[in-house]
Image 1 (cartoon, helix red, strand yellow):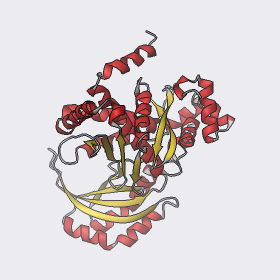
Image 2 (cartoon, helix red, strand yellow; image 1 turned 30 degrees about the horizontal axis):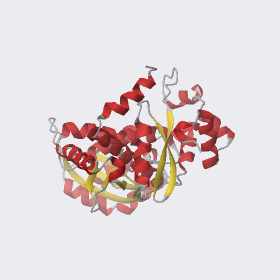
Image 3 (cartoon, helix red, strand yellow; image 1 turned 45 degrees about the horizontal axis):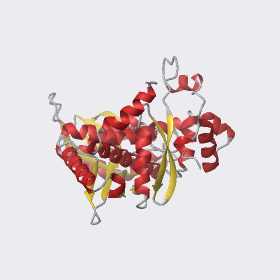
Image 4 (cartoon, helix red, strand yellow; image 1 turned 180 degrees about the horizontal axis):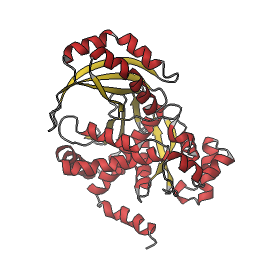
Length: 376
């Protein structure tokens, strides 16, 4: 059989159709532009559609399951590099991943509170009542926890002490932004009444630290180019861990993989980016999102950990048929499975990038594909 990259478009579409059971309508949607009527509902003042190439990364085995991974991205070499890295990982069993429950945090900011500590105690004493108000607004997700903490203003404005009331909400298979925001707005009047303060912000946090995903894999030293390349990759990682100038570019490579899958499947990649970069700086210094080390056998092992709030129901997938088909191509049955696949794409893309940088340099393969892109 031909390798996927050797096929022409019709052969690729037929392969995908047979692999995951696409209908003819779903197959056709992969080549159809988004209808302007749909775009006009999605954004204001719409005038057209901005197209982004959609490709398929191959060779991914995640927790023992083979997956085709749709990636929407305009940059050459990313899909090919991720596929190659996944093939190397495949020889050692592929990617192993875990994802937390889909717990999101919603925040209600309260200001002008005379006794913050006292107000906090009053809020927590009314926990059941507040959660009941929140849950009355949704049938699909559930508020399961409530917390409150004091925040001291560290800005130049010196606006004083604030109380932040935080809802913990199980978003299940949705990303959950709309439901979380609705719940925060619903409890705001009660929070103001209890605290005697003024409520300002009522919104989710995109720093989804209760919704973590972790993924790891082992890459054969021979497939990477030998022990010397493994050592050079570890030097590259050491710089990304220690120097913010390198860490930013290192993590850009990680997000090449994650964002491309996010865009293909209709996720909020800006929220994902913001949360990922905040997590990269969690100890006060911006560092690599991935970690790399040498195994006892001399192979290269890597892992990634980051907050990842994604969904397979609601959102863009309800409006954009291509995003809906992309989710079907991945054969994911839960938001957790999608998060794990995205983390695997990020780890694979990071490995591919630092391997190229540590060996022949990034330009050798990247610019060859870049030249093809512009017909040179």
